[in-house]
Image (cartoon, rainbow, N blue to C red; front, side, top):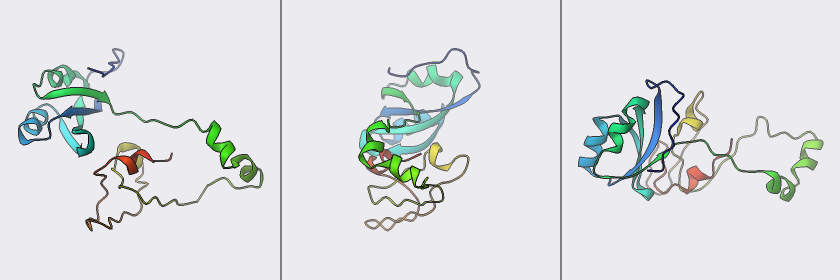
Amino acid sequence: MSLKEDNNSDCDEKIQIIVECSLDKEAATLINQIGKIKRSISCINAYVVEINKNDLEKLKNIKCLRALYNNTHITAQMNKARKTVNADYAQQKGFSGKNVTIAILDTGIAPLNDFVYPKNRIICFKDFINNKSEPYDDNGHGTHLRYK
């Protein structure tokens, strides 16, 4: 398993992990007996699952499981991008990006914790292909383009 465990934290703590497995009814039933499936990530055959940390070992024993991953917040290193877009010049001129809304046209956006907590930052969603109104990302690329 690729999941790193933190032995210093409270075992009753709720955590979110990515469970790579078959996306069928049997797998979903087994996982939901241990935790709660929050969403599926079909492009990598996985679920985002919320569980109590002390139930992690139970989840590791599911026969359809291929891998477990931490669902972590990742940020990009901006040192090269800042230079490329001349961000220092814009900042010196008083532009900070505050009160700016950015629209991304891509594969979608999954409503992961870093987008919706403590405040929902997804203010609008439009699916031009399937006409769905609730945020989702059936490919993963749009969610990967997130900005914090």
